[in-house]
Image (tube, rainbow, N blue to C red; front, side, top):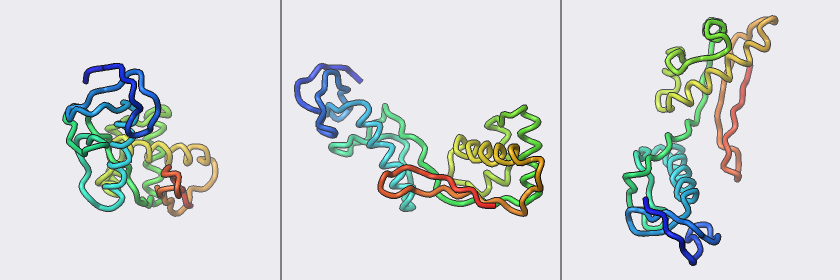
Length: 163
């Protein structure tokens, strides 16, 4: 991408542009606007069941931008963990001295989240293990469900943990 100063506003956010990226298709757009549009598109595709994209698209003409990788789509869904699996999570957290490496995500989580990116699987693992760690002196629950849903109009994502 080449940087050029422009006097016209950004066609996406209509804010003043002092430096803009010239996209492969020839449009000038704020870098943050291209990234935001690509992130929203990935999540919309994943949420509606369509295949996600490898590359971002121009927010103006929808041309593929092969020099901008699209982010992994946010995973929506729910996983359920048994008492035995919760014990394994606690052991994994203790073995890693409070950390869980990307390659240490238990198979029972990755199997329930097959479409999720490995970073998101790790995030779910850490969240569940951390909650268990804080309550480890009490009885382990019979099951634990972790659900990620879209949070209303704001487009943010929320995780719910249900014992």
